Length: 267
Ligand code: G3P
Ligand code: MG
Image 1 (cartoon, rainbow, N blue to C red):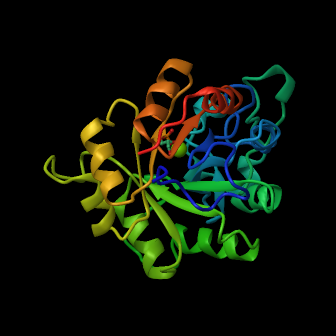
Image 2 (spheres, protein in one colour; image 1 turned 30 degrees about the horizontal axis):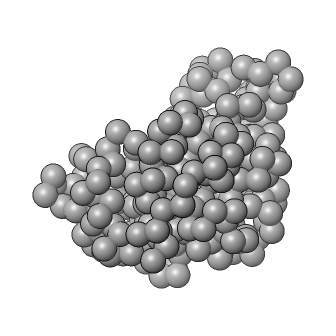
């Protein structure tokens, strides 16, 4: 039996059952979560790109990791306090000399760039999630994904379990991945049980959290496991040997090479 892996990719992964996931795009080389970093991920032959989504003050899904804009732009304030037009005035490429002036992309712009080219993991950040089931960030994202014909190539993930449940209520065919956060689950709950309870399709956690026991539990239940964020080859090799279905890396080129060179593991 091969390792469980996302089935959303545009082509058979270069390595059976293993997805190279570019974390915030090829973010070691380009400003994270920008169109530049996504073009980089496509050029580096990643199978999927992960992006983070928050809402602007005027309710537009924008692609950015932190609720405050300081880390990405050097500016002040919160994403949710600026309209899209105001956010577009900040320099999201300021950390990279060659990328100065790069703007924050909307989810719509990202979908336009990625449609037909690379699968997406849309991480809905907790700061955008509300108790409302309809009309919230989840429905906005799902609508955009359908409008770009990407519904068979997108997974939605979130640390906030409400976002995963909202996605499944809005669209039962939406693919979702639990992003493990121990504040929400009892120690006694296994990953496969969490995935089942939330009607999700995959289990994502950090390299520090994953254990052989969790891997065995997921394998026994056919649950794909994706691990973040791994930039060193030694950890990549160890995780691939453990049977993970995907790794999020800021260096998708290094992950691609390492995955191809790793001895095959049949479980
Ligand atoms: O989706 C994996 C990873 O991106 C989750 O953590 O903080 O990098 O969004 P973070
Ligand atoms: Mg993320």
